[in-house]
Image (cartoon, rainbow, N blue to C red; front, top):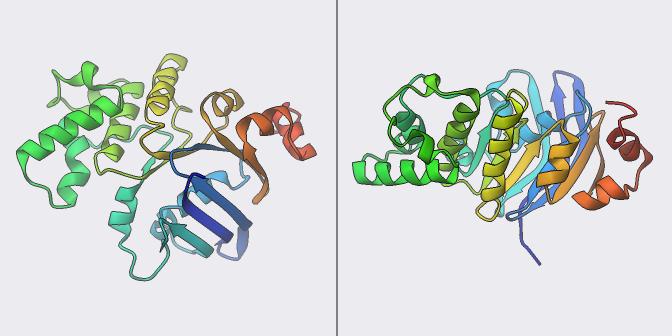
Length: 252
């Protein structure tokens, strides 16, 4: 049986006094790709951001529940959030490279962690860009600004930046929503190539994308987890009527 790398139990999240997540129980197996689907405002991105304490950066958000990552409590007072976010990396909907060179973007997290050895940095930058399936496109222009790249290339550089710190889990919040179909396809291909190397949790509005790339699918609605199962089962034989209605396009 594949080990569970991340276990969350009874997760409640509040924006001020408004409860946005109502007791979510969800766990993730090592090297699985899990898709979080559901209509806008269903809580899927809110839940995703709780997994590496992104809500710490916002005021008036309260998170309750159990979050265990490799047996460690993510929300323990002594948890170092910088190293947590290196181990649970995040890629956002809008490509967000820093306004530096491609090389410096990918090396950023390593330098933040104190790595200065040029040989190590060179090797890790190359490896990460290869993992993100963009090395061949940028290897001759590593010192050009990452902002000069196309949107799809920027997104893959953002993935490489997250990979450089050696994460165990990658959180992806609608990583292809802002991209044209060709660029989106390349980012999807990148995720498929990474599937044996790390665990991925992806929020997506695209039913087709969820069915193509994920092993497991979780369906959220109104801050509740309605259904969680193997992707094939959720799409072809859902247990709940709400899931069936959403997947068949009756609402959402």
